[in-house]
Length: 293
Length: 343
Image (cartoon, rainbow over all chains, first blue to last red; front, side, top):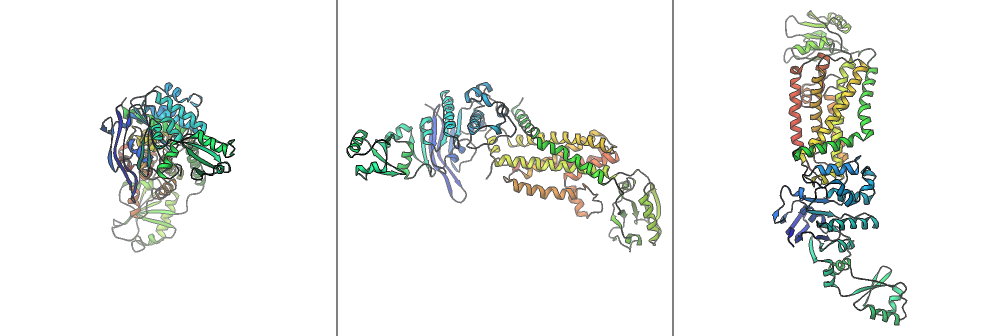
């Protein structure tokens, strides 16, 4: 697959010696969804804003289809920011028409409305939209010019779980149309579900890169059993038990064997939960810190 | 349609729609100046102001005191230095001043308006003051009511507030809430965005104030000697320059409080210096120079010349040229300083 975007040794310094981005290099393949995953302050937004052409790098290079970002780059990409206000007293339809008029290439409004499911609030003042409806409109605005690359900067932050899932459905719909997507998020579930490739960023550096499944397979060969502390203690194996809040996690490559040992020790499995390793576990493993701290 | 024109049209349309649908803002912009003019008409419909005002043509360097002539020490009379020329005499004709005294010739002379009772009273005071007798000259002309004189000032002041605060606050709000950052991610250019803000505000302010002017003309029987088209041209140009001035203020800042402070610092002195409520004839020379650098002065002076004296394009051309120069200067400066996002 040819790469649409190529980032080489990207560096961004802010005054007072802050190194927000510290030498990132990666490529984004045509038609793929590339995720920048990391905690707040990791440098994700700074990186994506440089890729969007809105922020100048201190050093390094960003190439779009093999050439530096040129004057018409903004006509060829679509951007959804984390927080964006819109003009007051304008309806969803009027906002779409306005943004549409700013581009030479325009996608028919009916298509956008259907793709982003805007029918029910098309003539509603945007100040009266819910958080989820608003994000759907902002996604439609990011798509008005039929962009070659769609940038989504933490698009579901602040949404309730249902609105977040609805939004993921929409992004999967966009992805199915072959669009290249660059996404930043600190939700590992979002990255796991939507991204073909991720780069885990911390302190402005990439600490792991690859497809979510390949990264997890490379770092873990076990699963996680969660039990109440009192039940896990019956195993008498403190090395295997890792306290996490009110429960204890047991990391094991042999689920059947561990369950058999727990039963033999007389532990109740009524509250047992078994889960696979996640990207959040991976971040913890790599940095020693929780992703959301 | 070229891309630039299409973007400009779309941005102007969107901003105009936003303003028109903001009922409280529109209501305030229309009702406030009408109330103000009606209030002033009521307040100034009674007896005139007690103070006499006398313009004095004096030799360079000579102080306006009793040494020049004992009349200049008369209490309750404001004497101020006037520049030679037709304008000074015209003020007597319009009864904007009660007398013009000339000590640059020998013997000295003075002008009064034969239709002005205050002029006649001043003549009595002059005779009683002693000193060298002055030659009497007369002129005539109907008195300009204060309401005729002050209305252009009040409407101009209202326009200034609409221009400065209307544009300044809106852009600062757009920057603060990230809307400008979103626009920056589109092909819209800074100059197109600013021009769109300017045009939408310009159309609305000129339309609203034209309606208010018509209402005042009907309600107060305002004096209108000149051409409505000339007045419209002057008003449009002045509105353009004052909005462009607001663009400069809002070009970089992200705090509404700071914007409010700066706009107050600009608008309050303009209200005083530009002669909204009172003539600045006789004010210190430096103040008059400062006034010439402000667009509101050229709007008010030009509008008064058109409305009260029937001035044509040629007479108000200095005002028009000054406004055009200020418009270009502020617009270019605003676009050069403009920032899409907060620091």
